[in-house]
Image (cartoon, rainbow, N blue to C red; front, side, top):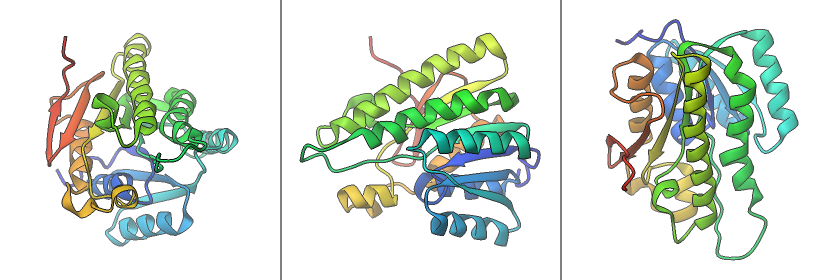
Length: 240
């Protein structure tokens, strides 16, 4: 199963750190060609260097996902250089301390709008049996008293994922859109906001769940919302 993804080309946003970086490494180890997207050249270089050093294939693109013009430019580049892709994994996320009133719009631009733009622009390139995987948060299911604005940005993402899954069934029956909602995870973003990241699950756990979905080794399917908490993955089923 090591080279089970050799024919797959996968875009991963937020690939410079955290869940995006871990997922890029997990999928590259399985043979996928990784298109790593991020804002920091330094961090993207680290991801690309690690993947290539392990014998993998990785291309990196610096894109500010808060900027629609950069997203459009990136999408046009992908169309020219790759023409088709198998999966789009929207892993980039952004969170701020919310104690004081300030401009919180960046959270919506990265967590919600960038996903909408990328999905609309790149979905036509998706091959059959491919799709979109959106990394959300359990905060988008149960809320967060500490970060309510962040939670709302993830609620919107979850709903958009659900609608996208429905739309895919009308366009291409073999396309999938799934939502992954991690619990507390050992990422730089968690460390920045709470300072306790090392207490929680490793980001590679989420990467392995995504790998199972892409390789068809998972029970999760189009439209599913998957909770990954304390190292375990399970289907979220809304209460009546």
